[in-house]
Image 1 (cartoon, helix red, strand yellow):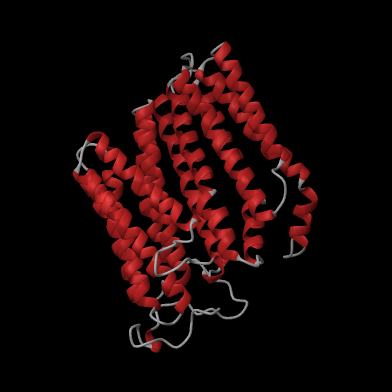
Image 2 (cartoon, one colour):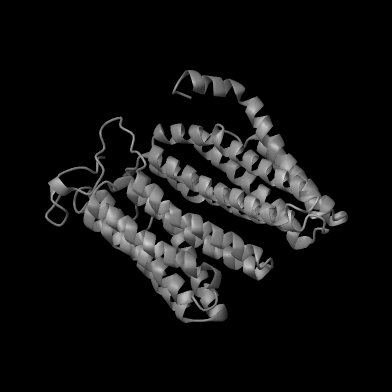
Amino acid sequence: MSIHTPASPASPPAGRSLLRSRAAGAHVRVTNIELFFDLVFVYAVTQLSHTLLHGLNLINALQVLLLFLAVWWVWVFTSWVTNWLDPERPLVRLLLLVLMLAGLLLSIALPDAFAGRGLLFAGTYVFMQVGRTLFMLWALGDAAPANTRNFQRITVWLVSSGVLWLAGGWLHGQWRAWCWIVALALEYIGPALAFAVPGLGRSSTSDWDIDGGHLAERCSQFVIIALGESVLVTGSSFADTWSQPQALLAFVSAFVGSVAMWWIYFDLGAERGSVAIRHAPDPGRTARIAYTYLHLLIVAGIIVAAVADELTLRDSLRHVDAVGSAVLIGGPALYLAGNAWFKKAVNSTNLPLSHLIGMGLLAALAAAVAWQPPSVLALGLATTLVLVLVALWETVSLRHLRQKLHDSSIL
């Protein structure tokens, strides 16, 4: 199904179509305006990691989790939309710039979203979700009837959840939390339920005429955003603690850990995923599972690991407590789990043994910490070694595949 067909009177005239041209075999490239839009989310990731760091307790962690899920959802939905819309068109660029401004306001509200800036957070979030979807409906018109019907269903779901987001913004305390939990749950189960709406039916992933390579590249860029935050945390924290004798060791450990995380995802995983989705019989289904849902674990793991790096640099010699160990071990564990399931989903293989062994070693570390708590630095070094081991193991075990990838564009 092509989405670039003659438009109806309800949509922009054909000469001014806002949709990308899908030439046979052509790759939908990521544009500079999309990368510019991502800059707001660099700030959002920084806000989330700092909010978690300055309140290392269960309640704050759950609140940051909810906010992270919302930030990811608004970003990934926008990436889906720009898979169809042509960002080189002035009106689409204007849409992204307006969303960028709203995203900046949303990011500003993150640290106090459960305090005095709840309505600012909820209002900008709903504006981005619903406003972008309505724009997409207008841009599609009748050019792609199946996709138009799909966005009609999505609008119903987002307006319904939007009421709860705004209600939560007005309310306080537990009422706000529960409104937002239900709103977020609605949005996350929507794709899994094919955006079913009475009278409009259910969607089908075969109707989501996407360019898989574009979405894979966009999600890879978000992983880079999160890893960039980790590197920034490492540098700024070391600048404040470099005079301490143990700071250099903590700094090297944090940097090597970030490099290992990059290697685990980007050495072969990202490219194999991109090739797999480009050749998938149903790229919409792969995009929904592997990139919309499973990348959550990958990005969440990086954010938690960034917090762990700052803890390691600032409190190296302190004995780790239960919260600290949860952060130091939990970040790498989330990251390995997300990568393992992502690679399984896109490559239709078993869970990578290297990742399973890594998660097993992290579980053993958790048991050892419960028995005899080490220093923060010692635990940080141990988790870094686990990540390096996984990266090396996968590099060696897939060396033939790497050579094949080097020699041919077909995996």
